[in-house]
Image 1 (cartoon, rainbow, N blue to C red):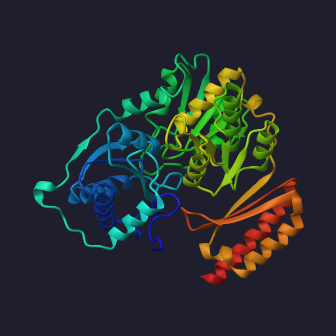
Image 2: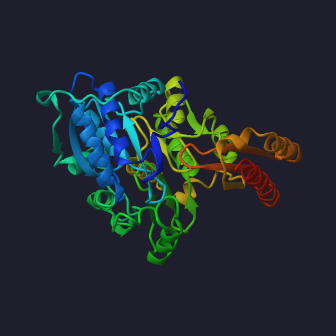
Image 3: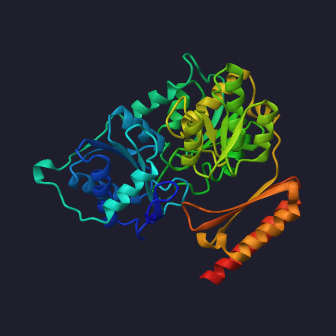
Length: 445
């Protein structure tokens, strides 16, 4: 069966356009409840800070209730918090209303299993099949009930802190923490203060419309400037739903997920905690692979998307993986990517080595990489003009670089990535390929 709704990270789109509409969400709640909790039980339902979350939350709640499933509402909470709370509350599934790093007028739905990890492809297909059937409300005596989880914040904060070693503290550190006006706004500053850090908080005034707007992990420039202005030791940036982490070192240099993954891998190797190797993606910088090889740490590439990184980790029985975008999997600490926990793990590594972030990544070379997002349908990637252009420029670059074109799984974009030894050359190639993709998109419209 061909997927109609699920992409690489749940269901996502523009609010008001199918399928991100109230009527679809009622049907989705019913279908998901029927598949994931056919004999009842409860689901944990959270959201980020988008204004549309109220509308979609109510619709999903109605659908689950119609399927005879109880709902536990958490209000705004990070996506990984719902994964944890689903396990803690013995839920049959966890559901998050979020479009992650997208603008406020997008939204989406992510699901977790009872174990706190992403649904399998087969489970997603079962939900899609159920969506094709009728919505037959259970008898009144069998309808689900809804209740609020009043201690969700405290439960999650304690869970996060317990992933750090006993007695670990951040006293003497000055941190700037950017929460992107998203789901970590009421959690991350509290946690780092409780651990003893002096915290300057940014992006902690959500109004439903400002999530990810010029802030957070997808726009770290404001954080970088504030770190320098405050003379801070580090800056931490999360995205709207709290599963990404980007950091800024004390010199104002932005450090992406590849750099942070290197810090974690080195720490785990030093302490004997590294299980096997490290999983990156097709987008991971070549410099990460080279730096890990220099330390004789195995490295494998998965498809783009944290679910594929997770699958590769599980298949190899490795526990550390991540993406350049800041999705970091520390599977010895949590079942899914978690920005707050990843930040804690990096801070633990830096403290153990008595290093600053810049010093900790100094041995990792960074190959110039250019990523351009071109509005285009996914099908143009396989078109003859685009394929011919890729082959031509692969010949031009030879062993000096590599090219990756892929359709975004969350937005109507084609991502053009070129990486190589010479920044000027890869910039020229990336722009040329983007122009070919744009022309193909125009011809296809």
